[in-house]
Image (tube, rainbow, N blue to C red; front, top):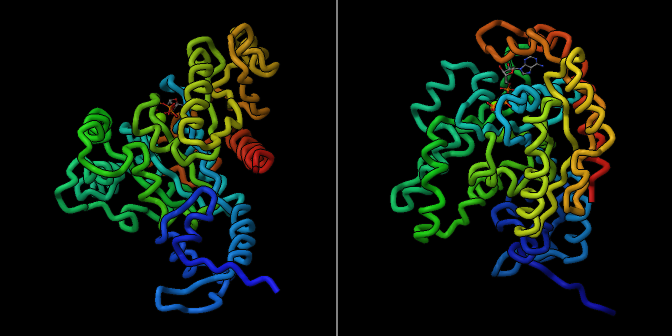
Length: 359
Ligand SMILES: Nc1ncnc2c1ncn2[C@@H]1O[C@H](COP(=O)(O)OP(=O)(O)OP(=O)(O)O)[C@@H](O)[C@H]1O
Ligand SMILES: [Mg+2]
């Protein structure tokens, strides 16, 4: 009779793919009713049957949150508008638990979701993501960032708040932080990898969510890399013109080599055409090229152009007004006008493509 292989909490943390902290395993024990019962409690702590744990981890892998970054190096292409709409629709229409992370120092998504007054209060007392990074810049001072206090629950102007939509807000201080972080890392002032600060901070909460949506600033700097570091997928919003699409090749190649350097997959699930004007010939031409996957033609690469989403978002004055949290736009229809249905269809496509891409 073969004897069972037994494992403790630290071995379970190592067995997870990707590996997690011991704290994360402790949290799973508390959070998931189906977490296996230990076979024995030794003086060193509880131990489990390794096979039972491996099975549980495998089942759990199917429930890993999808972490989707919205990214383009070009400004003003509706990264924020699209990521906020997708997050709101995922939470309200598809009843998913969603965490929205605003990584852009412009704080547009934060203000869109909670308004300027609430953001001002939180910014003043360090309940934004900037505080997390500021703590790392001062490794000898006490940490002020508290993940539970920084997450704002039930955000959105719609319905006075959407029950399953949470926000980690940004701050303008990110601009300063972005510049300082790499230097602190070079001086070896703290043991954390400066690209891994956000992922580590989220380990105790990420299991609560089905989707994490990240609004990235228009750069591939260290703050964006903190988001990409644990992203499973990314979406590229782009206006179908020359200047908004020229950087797509650079994004795809940069994200691909970054993913390889951290030994992970970050899958490009698609390009979404935004602010489309059907009466502009250039838009029609660029859309055709994107639809036919020709953007990388003639480039020296094995990488394919990410597929264009079928749902495109038209230029619309109502959608532009939707970013104003004080405007009393408390329904999808008021907030997005005629672009609500295309945003809904896009969200459906995103869910489908994430599921197709499951390993
Ligand atoms: N479908 C649309 N029709 C008209 N205006 C839009 C549409 N989508 C977004 N806008 C407007 O375009 C501007 C840029 O949008 P948004 O802030 O979402 O872009 P962004 O890519 O996040 O920009 P940034 O690079 O500055 O973060 C905003 O004023 C927004 O309200
Ligand atoms: Mg933005």
